Length: 98
Image (cartoon, rainbow, N blue to C red; front, top):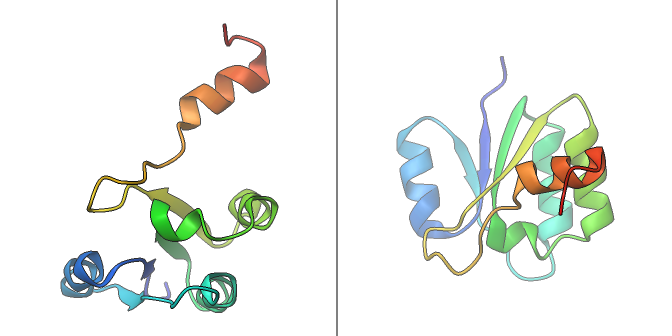
């Protein structure tokens, strides 16, 4: 298995580096290219919600639907951006949302 990647802020990246992840903290405007690069090098990519919100939604969703790598959006450490509610999205798709 290839080493996992974390894309996000430097503070959170430090913790993920200690856990054995490779990390990237892309400057504004480079998020999509960094995401594409890391997806080509890993089986698991975690991306903070803050960075994920800067990637075009359709492109991010396409990458999340791909079977490899597993791409997960996680809440950012500062709590300003939350990860998408997967349960709500699934309920909408199944026609169970109110």
